[in-house]
Image (cartoon, rainbow, N blue to C red; front, top):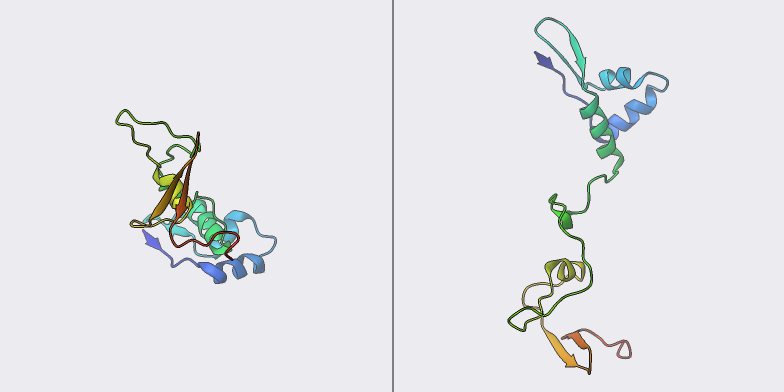
Length: 127
């Protein structure tokens, strides 16, 4: 089985535009997205061609890196007091805020609320 070096990136986009009215399969073949079996049969690899074209155009189909491909729970913006009395703020919230290990907060308690103010952050009236 032989394989060609398929076009990628801007070269792929330009070639597809240049090929105008050809079918998708013909465009894929012309851009190098095919293999030839030992029996001489050509096989067009449409999936690789279409994925390369999507990548070349800069289209993001996958979710952002926050999901890490595992499809976990989404942030509900609610937490519960744990059995040991602690409140745990999950990584979904700290990532969304761009927090790093070691970032410090000042805790202010109200009658029915807790405020966290990042130390070193400017107040609205300090800006």
